[in-house]
Amino acid sequence: MPDPLVLLPGMMCDARLYGPQIAELSSEAAIMVAPITGADTVERLARQVLEWAPERFALAGLSMGGIVAMEMLRHSRGRITRLALMDTNSQAEIPSVAAAREPQIARVRAGRLEEVMRDEMKPNYLAPGPQRFEVLELVMDMARALGPEVFVRQSRALQRRPDQQSVLRRTQIPTLVLCGEEDALCPVRRHEFIAQLMPQARLEVIPGAGHLPTLERPHVLSAILRAWLHAPDGAILS
Image (tube, rainbow, N blue to C red):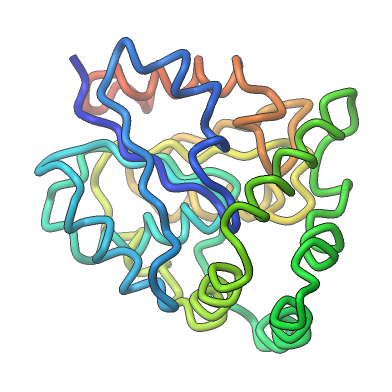
């Protein structure tokens, strides 16, 4: 039996982001989805997850979840046994993007969360295909469920997030770096960079997927995670 798996959702997403993977993998490993909604800094979010996570566990995060996962590496003291970073960014927020979040926050506080989410989850973040509309509607439903205060806290956390390159260089656990081939928000080249930083990383690029491969190509993503979960230490590099 592999170690328990802790999943971290992306911004304004809940456990439904990983619904297909939970359905396909829960008979093989204990799976927990950690909300990253209760603080406005990445460090506090990372510490909150570590407070309730098992003593030793595999960790996978997508987008903002990957950002929190990288911060958890700073504080985990060997508790994380393997890592999956999906459709994410290891670098600090650039000033122009941080500044662009301010009008979004103002609009959300004025009651326009759905409008902001529809603007931000542009269809070109996802790969073309019949599943695009269904995925976007699920994203909107998750955002409505979490609400405006979570949007504000998560936006602040992203604005202030630290650069993680030095952390990744020191990480010696088997790591899966994965992204959708058509992710326009966190493109392939960013994941190539992450994989090059890490001594034990393997890069997987999923054709026909954009920023949310867990929902866009769920069975492919589940198969990759299954192999990652069950691989002996070091075998992920083969």
